[in-house]
Image 1 (spheres, rainbow, N blue to C red):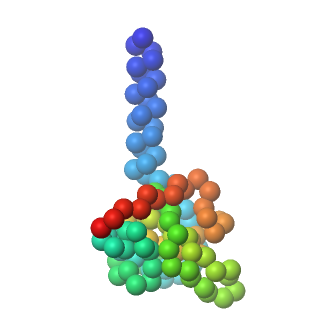
Image 2 (image 1 turned 90 degrees about the vertical axis):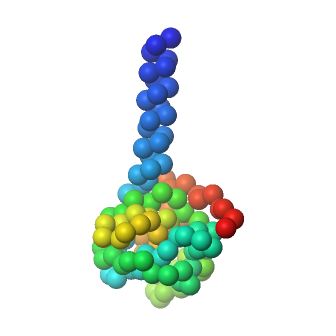
Image 3 (image 1 turned 180 degrees about the vertical axis):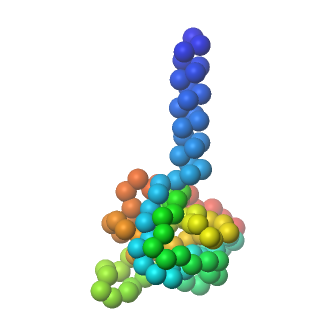
Length: 118
């Protein structure tokens, strides 16, 4: 019985750590804005959300992703997926368009955020 309890504790601890830390992603561009994810911006990531910081070629932790404003920057294909990230030098978590994150439009291994009403 004790072995099962230890295993269960380890599994729960692993889930909590993964949710808190998220998946490491790479933002490959320069001066990419990280946008506020508080209030109405949590459910609707867009360029209308206030800028809380910016990063250049940085590794950040993405906790989840959500569809928001469609971003179009040539020569890249349009993308409406945004990731909630914690980046070095930025005071809190915020949104970044997946357009500037290395990988597919919808990132693999990053769960979908649960929308909340504000």
